[in-house]
Length: 269
Image (cartoon, rainbow, N blue to C red):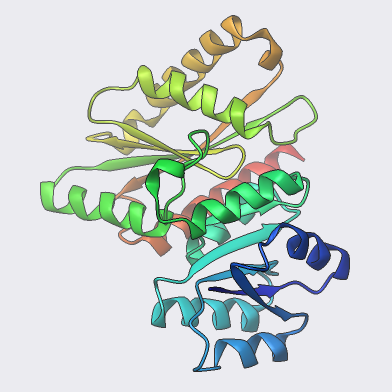
């Protein structure tokens, strides 16, 4: 029996989660307010396998409560359930230690597949169009390798948006990711997070080289769109940060990227 805490204050969204959870295999603990969430997180008799939460990242108390619990019980999987598909929400999800985040507009079938995927330890059942990992640990691992190898590392935080400035389908994100990755150098790597976010890691790339990297990414994306006209009006938005010049830790990296995104948003408005 899997034990799942659901932190959701909107009843209709809570009902959606109830519908997609296998009640015979999972026991749900529904927290519709902060006190109930605190009660379940401090209940020693419960081994929590998963937390599904719609977090307000501006509410420090609920974010700290979840973060502290994950530090104590890192095997617990956190899934962010949200209406916010922005880069800021993406970065906040990484920082708090989420394994995945699901947008409210996802279908019930998609929500069920994503939740089942995290609860199922059989890697053969993983959905091929959606990479699941703890990005906080992944980024930290890449920084550790760069530090040991004494080389600079540039990380590109990318989003793919359609003509309405909304995220594209996860299957389309996977198509773009596969094309970009196939044209990267052997030392470079790329991972998918959420519906339309990509993280690219470029070892030995200095801060001065970022304009050339961006030119290459935009060129590759243009080539992809020329062969996939259904995505011809989409845009690839990149934000870069370089270790160690701009940050030494994951928190440094995320904080600097957020500042750059906010600055870019201010320029564009």
